[in-house]
Length: 252
Image (cartoon, rainbow, N blue to C red; front, side, top):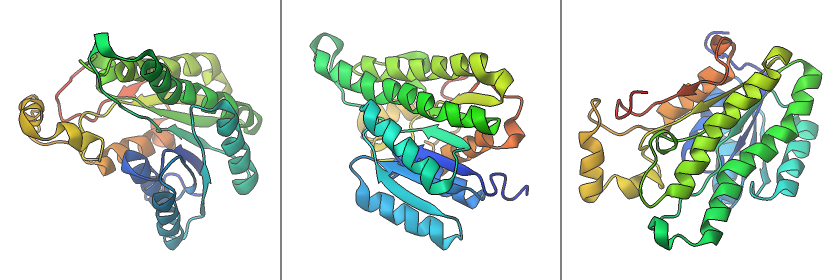
């Protein structure tokens, strides 16, 4: 059981077709979970993840979902509950990060990032909590960001949404903790994904590297292990907390 802390649990991961979401889905499966894979634009990646999970002997399936659309979020949740019988864990991972100077930031970009990166978490959490209450408990993990703790130029919308993801986890835990539902957040630093690599190169990358006592950027698999820990009973005392796998660049 220690080798498979999520044995036979069902975990729904949004944005699981690539990047950190893909690594979370795979880590959950290696931990013994069956995985419902929600994806938006990366269908081929989602199918590949599903096949790899099934090769591990765990059940997996995919379903499209634009998390900025409340109807689609409730549809994917209903599908997962019907397909797998229940949802024990929700990982709110899907997100986008366009960049622009604050004074030039189009309001439609602000709205889209907040709808995707924060409102999507709200919709998904509202969708899964009734089932979790009925079955006696469940776990929600919001993927936030170091930038949600520090703010950052050119991504005010992203940083604001990620700060909201942290507050949302705290609020859910305070309201539903006594009824068996735990919510926490993971706030990675720069991570070696397609999104992360945009800030790993050039002078920006060198500056960010100088901030890291560890001397290297993180890998998505390392972030995923934090998520599996929070999904498991080993973190039973953690409610409304934020883990920060960032190589020491930020020590809250």
